[in-house]
Length: 230
Image (cartoon, rainbow, N blue to C red; front, top):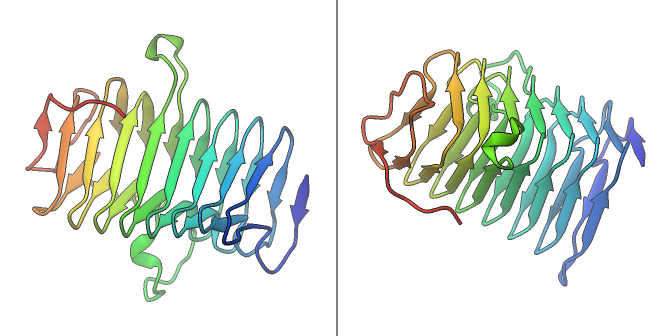
């Protein structure tokens, strides 16, 4: 599948009863679409096996209203104006295997209403985000790098589970956990070389687990140890 130059959403998945979409090997969504892949209302979208989602005017991938979106295999989401992935209103996002989210958000205007949300991946308003690679001994796992804003932004009563992931070289922090959100770090998370720090949270949020791979930890409420994976 190749969808480029669409001024609306590149691929829209939805419906009251839920729907399912799988983007298979070699799919391309980009170059001027609004949001590359958008779905919700209990629907499921899966991008896998060398899918390329790039240069969209909004998010590369977006889910809302209890939808579920998965990014796996060698999928790359890059150069999307609002971010690589957005999850809101009880949605679930899964990033796994060797997926890469990089160089997202290039909007020059700090007065733009989405400027504060710029990130590689953003979960907010009661959403769930899972970023997990295979066994750490494999040397493989997702990478979130070179994004403008935080690499991972978890906000407004949302939850993050992160395992065997590299978060690096993002311009405004590696992982940010805000406004009554929680994050569990499992083993083999590497968060380094992010401008402004590699982990941050506010006083309303909680970060816990294995933080040994975090470089600069600006989250005073974080707790080393404890927690169980899903």
